[in-house]
Length: 315
Image (tube, rainbow, N blue to C red):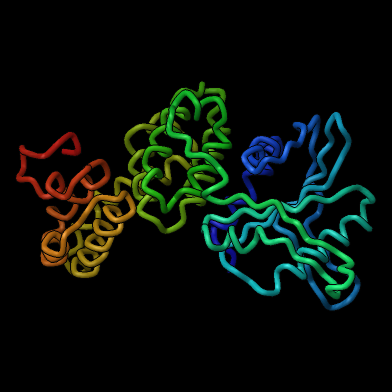
């Protein structure tokens, strides 16, 4: 089953095809920005019972010429992928007659390192084909933590947030992105809604996703798009609705405990064994909700557990 985070890592290039040239500069590869780009059918199936589909496929026209860009979102190592990728490139070259480029986008560092290997296809004496994918991962795309920098390139910031979703820098990227989106005009509401959705999808099930829902509920409440409203509702529901049904409290308590510990770990806040036991031992949803809200911005466990009135700005 294809996950939403998988979709976001390649769909972002559909929203802004020029993002490709900007994103791969950090890999030391220079592509001219496209003059135009048009989507192509992603179905590479032949007239036989073998179905092959690339995630995103774009025909890119630049001042220096044209090429076909195939974007693959890769979540884990797959020994069969290099053969599939080689097939994609050969098929595209045969079908369209213009140079193909394969871009593999990975939010996991080990997967990115695996995907970046050059693969020689053929006997060692004379490899007939060499597979050289361009790979974007957390180490090849910079952290964009400045609101001004985020405003200059919102699609690149969305991609940066998705690739760094498990890093301590994720909260800084998301805060910068929220401020950049907040600066968009009312005419750009549909565009903002698209990037809000892609960001939420790209973060997957990580503590950073909780922070993003909080930012949507607090900082971007003026957006009226269906997506923005849904995300705001989810963010508010986490703080209010979880304590209303006593019959389901136990499950919600366990979920909130896990949320707090994962959020602190994901943000790099040190949690001692005593602190961990303190969270696990709490059975009051209201208290856990307060701790969760504080954990979004706290720099230490002490800030999270401080008595009411003594905590930092998170209260």
